Length: 297
Image (cartoon, rainbow, N blue to C red; front, top):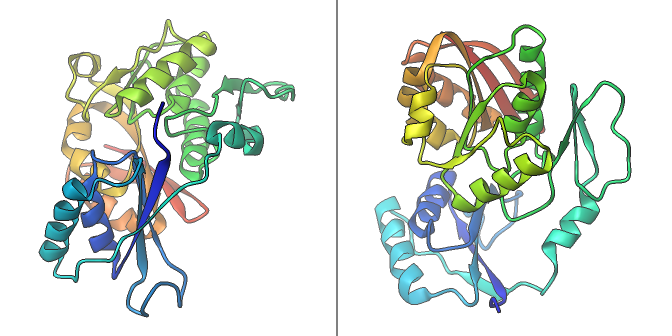
């Protein structure tokens, strides 16, 4: 039986140090999140960012402590004081199911399997159950991508599409359901790929969608699918920037790229990485402080 999940919180002076310490524990924790603290929060006015991470049982400070200490030294900050405590034993999947109302994004209608509401006429129904992988359609980045894809699909029907960082495969399934053509999909997280494959079967889209575990485009199946007419990547700003050369290389002539996972204030730095690869912006959509960008050659 799994241990009780513990949450650890670190207060940090800026976003860069929060990202650096998060990177230091990446792979050693169940999950993590960084966010800016409201004015006046935290022990000291200068501490404006929080890093939270979760562990299966009490954190192993023999492993995590030195990594955090080294990252703090490299950032030039004092080693932060961790606040760790066990989380209440709650069935988070069941709680998530209770709070997840169906959503409408253009022609796409996303709901969980237990929902009793009937999809509106003319919509493309996607069933995504709450689970252990990211992506139930409620986040602004996923909704932004679905709305952007809906607009694209009104003008063209891509023959070769890729969902990079597919999570639960909402975007890949939306493309497959709308086009009835194969869609390549990959995620660095093997658990996400497992859930994505389950969702594809649940939606009877498995003939079009066989997701793979891959870091970026470094997988033979994803390489064979290039050049792509459409690449969707809903990840985070810095991974998107690192992937710019490989995404541009995999994009076919006249192809489109949809990027999300970006805060509005991160648009400029993400765009600079893709402009350096010869792509230009063709559209953007902003929801709840998050940005979805449409790029083309």
